[in-house]
Length: 118
Image 1 (cartoon, one colour):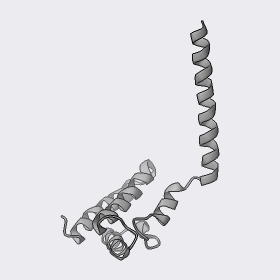
Image 2: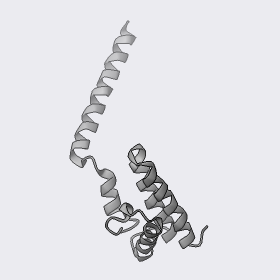
Image 3: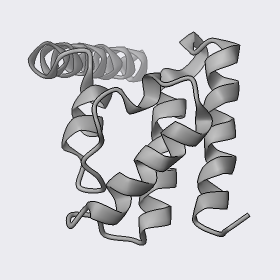
Image 4: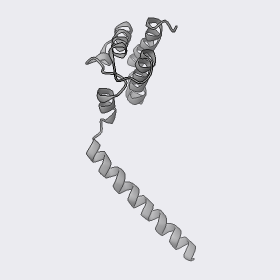
């Protein structure tokens, strides 16, 4: 009998702690943490509206320019550009329309071509 009380008391405490910590941190940081990462990433300084273009070649060219110009990136320009594009696709998740996802996936292929990795 004592074991069930301690177990339920412990789990209730964990639930309360988890709710309080995650709820307060969300209010402080806001809902758009991925936007913050995109804008202030150590990998690249992106051109404004780079992912809104419908032309995969334009997206790839912009990412390539940003990656080669950046002094803050840690890896190669190709890896930085591709990781930023992948990050954007992954963060958009299920809300990304199929046509936009297709364009962004084509931009990945185009990026590989522009860097000579295809």
